[in-house]
Length: 116
Image: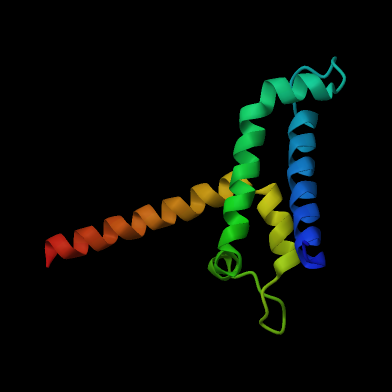
């Protein structure tokens, strides 16, 4: 059985992804059409699948991703609920940024090893 906190994290992540998708829909250029869920899924299924996979990946990283992002509460504990929402809202961006930082650090390490 799933713990209550895990359910809360999943709900917060889903709210984040939903808010992100609706904000993108609101910014669309053709405002004459109304929202159609079937059309949206058909048109955005790849982005939706990537978002779900990104969320699962980021959840598996758990506290490490929160530590990496410096997301802590005043008492120093990880800001898990805020992190869960941000994981849902920023899922693609977080993965791109983490991977970009890892690639930069790997490049710096290679440069240092070759130069010395």
